[in-house]
Image (cartoon, rainbow, N blue to C red):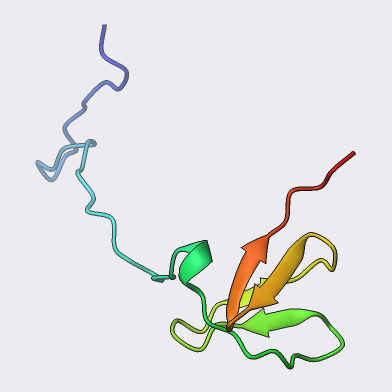
Amino acid sequence: MNLWQETIKQDGTSSLQTHTPKVVARWCKFEDHEVDNEFPNSRIAVCKKCGKHIPLVLGCHEIKNNHIFSIALKR
């Protein structure tokens, strides 16, 4: 059983079309982001390489040598 049923329009075009996805943004891997140690009170760091805005939660993230690390919370 087909998921979609094809119909042919009056102008001869098919109702099924193939679309090629396009890249809208490229980001670094999380561990490859490079940020400054100084960021605004909003706690949003900006990667120097790709420009992504990264919200930081103090206690969950740590910055060492301009790289952001996630810290596992211990209970």
